[in-house]
Each structure stands twice: as C-alpha cells, then as structure tokens.
Length: 452
Image (cartoon, rainbow, N blue to C red; front, side, top):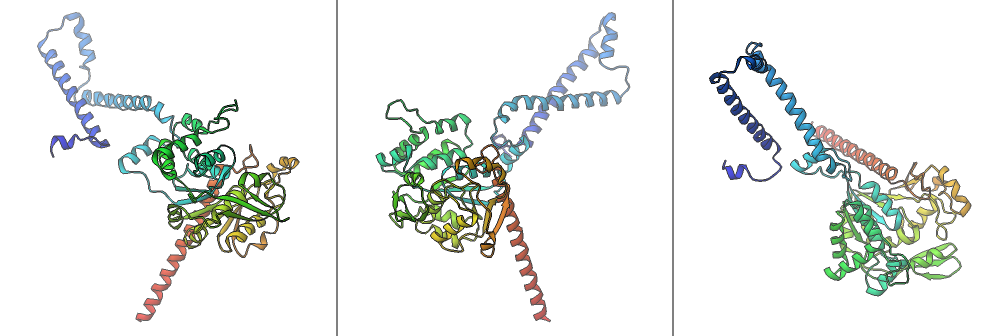
C-alpha cells in the first residue's frame, strides 16, 4: 500500500489509534535508550546515587520491574486519553439536538447512519402538524410532511397576495419543527416583527426569507428546499399543491364563506368544504411520497381547514388508498370553536369520509385522558368525546391513548403522540410479518402434500 493512500483523510479510527500508539512507543523507547546510556556511562555523585536507584526501581528484581512500569503507564495513558477526549468534546456534545452518545456518532460516521425504521408521511397543517413532527424527529424514522396551502390570513395571506406565491406560514412552522440547526436560527425564522406602523408589521422573518428565496431560486419548491438546507431539516417538507387555492365552506344555513381565516371566525355547523379551483393539481413529489410510505398520518390539526383541504387536492385521496402503508387518522384533543363544536371522534372521522370517501384510513388514534381538558370548558372548548365508537368499530380500528399535553391541554404532547404512533406501526409490522410467515408455511405444507 502506498504511503499516500494509507494516509488519506477519513474516519479510519483503528488506523490512527495504531499510528498514535506506535508514535508513543517509539518515543518511549528512544527516551529509555537515552536514560539507559546515561545510567551506564555517567557516574552519579554519592549523595544522589541512592535517589537514582530508588527512582529506577533497582530494588525490584527483573521482570517485575518492567511489568510494574508497563501497568502503571497503561493505566495513566488510558485515563489521560479518556479525560482529555471528554474535555475536548464536551462543549460540542452538549449542543446535540438528538442527544446521541459519542459511540453512536462515531459509528454513524464510520459505517454510515442506521437506516430509518419507517418512512412516515404526515399530512395536515397548522400547529397540529408541527406538534407531530417535533415528536417524530427524535426517533429513527424518515419523515415527509405534506402541508396544506389554503392559508390566507396574517403574514402568509399578505405575502400570498402581494407576490402571488403559495402561503409560506405552515411550511415555515414545519421546517422549524424539523430543524436541527442552532436554536437561535429557529428563533430567527419564527420571529415576528412588532406592529409599529411599518410595512413589516406582523410579518414573520421566516416567511420573508422563503419569499426572498423564491425570487432567487425561481420557484417555491426550490425555496423550500434551500430553506430546509439552511435549517438542517431532518426530513422533507412539501406542499400538497402549488396552485393558488382558496378554501371555501358551505354552512348548514346555506351561507358560503371563502377563505380559511374567515371560516375560523364564523359560527355555525359546516356542511361541506370545497376548494377554488375545485380540483387543483397535486404536487407530484407529494404523491410519490404517499405511495412509497410505510405509515400515512392524517392530522392532528383543524379538521375543516388543515386536514380535509389536502384530501380535496386532485389525486391525494386516491394515492392514499393505493398506498400499501398503514393509514392513521389522529383525532384532535379538543373541539375547535366555530369548526367542530360538539364533535366527537366519530363525527371527526365521518367528516373525513363525507369529503374523501370511505375506507381511507385503517385506524383512528384518539386521546382518552379527558381530565386536563375540563378547565377549558369555561371558554367553550371541550375534550373530543369518545361516545359512539361502536359505530365505526366495524370500519376502522380505534386506539385510545393518553396523548394530551398537561401544560397545554388543548394540544397533543409531541412525545406521547409520536410514541403511540410508532407502537401502532410496529405492532402492525409484526402482525404483517407473522401473516406472511403463516402464508409461506401453509404454501410449503401444501407443496409437500402435492409432492407426496
């Protein structure tokens, strides 16, 4: 092997440890030879002769003298090397977002990262989707977030109107939720300019950044990709459609309200949600992600303005049905005033089926701990009821878990939600594996019977 090839840069840990050890041994031998020569050829004065004999362990016979020195030297080398490494690496390891150990980091760098356990596609928008993503990113899963593009209020609505681009707000929230960048960078993306009478009033810096990146890259999807790189996003974030859509609601009394922000302000029972244009073209990479997923998650989030609008994009519901993935609907923890007043788990699922058809999801995950939500009843917000689950039990499998965030009882707890989803997915994966094994055994038995 050529020396230049042997010394090429890379994470060759064993090679560099061997080189370090060889250097230490060679240096030690040189020092030992020099000291031995001095000891043999230099006559020490009588007053220091005894001290020299004690330091060189002349009172211990061979080979115990060498064994003692090697043992002490080995212990000192190991302890010193370990403590030095900890002192040098501690400031960097303390900044890890995923809290991985040094051994895991070295293994990933040496042999490559561990393959993700599952590919999870999360479909929704708003705060609910961001909550889910924050929980999932701490696990070894590949994440794709498909975000609704119907936001027309606040900073997103103004930028959408001024620059004729898809609304960046929900995309920004998902990017920050999946970010592995420095906390300061995430805070910068979420910073909102105060109302001081300027043109920047109420705008989010992240929204402005995405708009500027759209102008530079020439496309909204390019801006999202570059923003993901800036924030070191762990996963992919993409829109459900690139068309300029408006979410519209028809209420039970016949009123039609146009615009997501206005729908949330209305009071009344929603009969149906529709889009304008009615069948916007889906973003093709989003459809490909759905078809290749292991788990597809709908929600959590505003039922009529975040979850259902994605299902009305042309091709999305059809791709979900065609996908071999496990399809899970995550029901909200509480009702949403003006949208889902009086809704239980059953009504949430029926609303989805009414807009996107039956057999869209395999199971429903809902919160069973309603006690923390009692304090919200004074303002007209109630925990989503579990009554009537037997009406949907023959169509979907219902999983009840404690999913509520005790500090914010109107929201899911990211860690609890992610853990519950992964448990369901792993259980289904094991069940499928057992089913396949049973079929193979039955086929083998049948083959043996025919051969006889």
